[in-house]
Structures are given as structure tokens and as C-alpha cells.
Length: 414
Image (cartoon, rainbow, N blue to C red):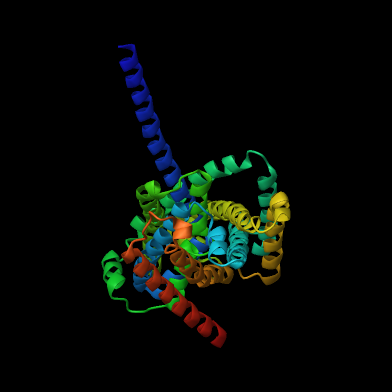
């Protein structure tokens, strides 16, 4: 009786542990999803959506739909390979070809630098809205100092995370207010989502690059590795988490697009120096304008810290010196981004270019992950990457490569 009772207790404890493990894993999966989604919804996201809505009108719905499909396919492939292999992207690349991981880490860090220059531009734009006497360049320099200070403070990250959640909620609430107050032509947007009147390849490359290009998609996948959510048994959760991440970012983009379309359809011309803030000023008045300035600055400053930290996390695996001095390298990364922005200026253009640059990087990194998915030495003998997902992934790789080359060709001509 005692032995039977002991066995029952042990079985109960094992069931409890397994149940909790599933709950913990799901919590970690959603954490990675939110990390990826919040990384994607930064100042570049806001600016790109507003600028392209102004140039393409309702036809931008088609660009959003295409980008969502490409985003899901790219992220599903990348997250699955990383989780099954239990290795970071640069380590997978090195397993394929010694030295390839260094190239991947360098490319992702370069994309992260482009993002960070744009993020500091967004911070400068936000500060200019809050304090009109401060130019975007000066605002970016001040924001860089604040970002470095926050990075050095022990608990500042947690405080900023909570503040970002509050500001994110404020952004969605304000956007919904603009959407319902301007009554955008939703019917036309739905129609143009499948039958566009105008098409812009740069917009697709920029949106996909700004959502799953460069460091953003790897930030979520590497978080899973760090948390121990690995192996074939975790794939159902990884699939859901990956799609959830894209869905979260996409819902926000659709809401923002419809709000911008509603404002533009009234005949308003947005201020080219800060299109998203201008949109909120026209729809929500000066109070909405100031609140959006704070939201933009918050999104930018957290993105600055996140992009710098994640980019350096790629580089620190390349040499023990970088890993030992990763904090100094992160500070240097932020300072370098600030100096480059202060020299170049033009925050709106930089925010568009940052997404495009990372759109160029995506076909390279995705292609490497797809090749790795067929290597048993990397993913294991018992894992078989779905054929449909491989085909989908290679189509995305080919499309993004061709569109990136075309975009580069157009940029060189102009």
C-alpha cells in the first residue's frame, strides 16, 4: 500500500512537472513572440507605414498582405531550424562552412547598425515633437546619452519594458481613435489588397526587411535557445509563437495603415519631416501630437538599446575579447550610430533605408537556414524539414533576392 501510494505520488509529481514545463515553455514562446513583435514595431515601422500609405494610398494594402505572407514563411523556417539544431544562427552557418558564421554575424550587425541609426533618427523626431526647440539631430544625440545611461543602470531595462508596454497601448488606442474618427475607405482597401492600382517593390522589401530582416527574427529565436526551448518536441509551440509574433505586428500595421489612409483620404498632406506625427496632429490635435511624440521617442529609445544589445550578441561569439567587453561594445555601438546619424541627418529617409538594407540581408540568412535544414549533422537524424516549408522558403529567398537587386538598381539610377 505504501509502495503503491509512493508510486502514485511520484507519477503525480511527474505529471505536475510536465504540465508546468509545457506552461513555462508556452510562456517563453510568447515572450519570444512579443520580443520579435515589439522589436518590429519601432519608429521605422511607424514611419514606413505612414510614408508608403501616403504614396500608394489604398494599394498599400496589397504590399502589407504580401509582406505578411513572406514574413510568416521566413520566420517559420528560421525559428524551426534554430530551435531543432539548438544552435545560434552564426554557429549553424559555421557548421555549414567554416567562417560563414563570421560573415553572417557581420551582416546582421551591419543591419542592426542601419536599424540603430534610423532608431536614433526616430528618437530625435520624437524629441522634436515634445520639445519643438530641439532639432532631430540634437534630439538624437541627447537620446543616445539617455540610452547609454539606461543600459548601464541595473533595473532600467525592466522599467523601460513596462513603460514601453504602456506607451504601446497608448499608441494602439490613439491609432484606433484616428481610424474611427476619420472613417477610412475600408472597402477600397480590401479590394486593393488583391487588386492594387499601384505597386512599389521598395515598399515590399522595406516592410519585410523591417519585420523579419536582419537581427529582429533572430532576436526571438535566440531567446528561445537561451531559455532552453529547443528540440523537435518544441516545434508545435514554436510554430504558434512564430505566427503569433507576425500576427501581432501585422495587426498593428493594418490599424496604423487604415488610420493613415483615413487622414490622407480627407485631402491632408502630411509633413515630410515627420509623417506619422503629422498624421496624429491632423486627426487628434496638438494633444495627440504631443502624446505621439512621447510614444515615438519611447519606441525609438527601447529599439536603440535592443538593436545594439542583439547586434553585439552576434559579434561576441566571434572572439573572446568581444564577449569579455560586450558592455563596452554595446555602448560603442550606440555612440557610433549616433555619430553617423548626426553626420547624415534626414531621419525619415534613414528609417526607410534601414528596412531596405535588412531586406537585402534576409535572402542570404534565410537561404543558409534552408540549406542547414537538410543537414542531418545540424538538425539531427530524426528531424525532417517539411517539403512545403522548404519550397515556400526558397520562393521567398528568390523573390527577396530579385526584389532587392531591383531596388538597388533603382536606387543607383536615382
